[in-house]
Length: 248
Image (cartoon, rainbow, N blue to C red; front, top):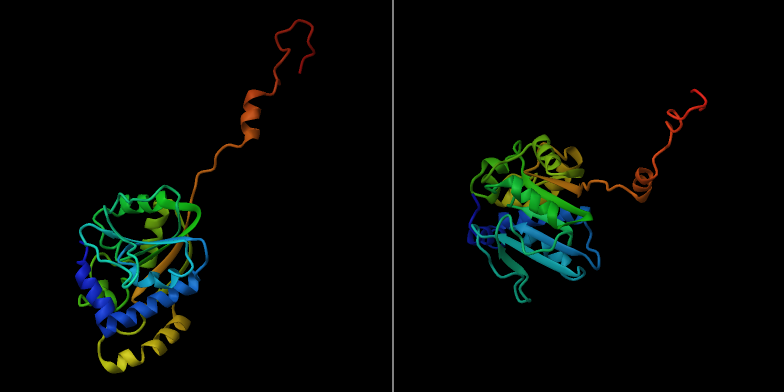
C-alpha cells in the first residue's frame, strides 16, 4: 500500500525529523553517486527529496510518482519534473536511465516483481540503480509515525536475493538513519554525530534504512566468431565412407 503524497511531503519538508532523515539518506546517496554532467537521473516512489543536488549538472532529472500515491509539483519555484505514472508502466524508453533510485517504492509496491522488471527495462547496461528500503532490524521500521514504518521491511539478505532474481547484480550496500526516530530536541541535535558513529560501527544492522546499489545483468550475445564457426564446421569425419581412405 502506497502512502499518500501529502503525508510524505509533510514529513520530509515540514517536520524536523523528516528533514533530518532527508539529510542522512541523501548524504549517503551523494557519497555513492556524486553529481555528474550529462546523466539522466530518475527517482521512483517519493525520491524527489534526494534528487535536488543533481538538478544543476544532470542532463535530465525526473521524479516518477505512482498513481496510488499521487503526485505533487517538484521542484518548488522551478520547472516541474515530477510525473504521475502507472507503477509498472513508466513513460521512459528502454535503456534510457543512467541513475535510478527508489525510495518508498519497492516496500510499498503491490507487485514488486513487475516493478523490478520495469526498473531493469529502463536502466542502461552501464547504469546503476539504488534501492532504499526500511531495515527489518532497525528502529524506524517499528515506528509507524514515519513513512519507514509502512510496507514490507527487508533484511539485507532478503533484499539482495530479490534483486538477484530480478537480474540485478548487487555492487555496494550501506545503511543510514542511525539516529532514533524521535522528535525530541536532544536526538535531533545529536543526529549528525550519531550518523557518523553509526557508519563506522555498522553498515548493515543498526541503520533505519538499507541502501543497495546494483548494476544490470544483460545476457551475452553470440559474437561473429561463433556464427562463423557454425557456418564452417570441422570436417573431422570426412573420408570415412570413401574407398581407399586411411583408417583412423
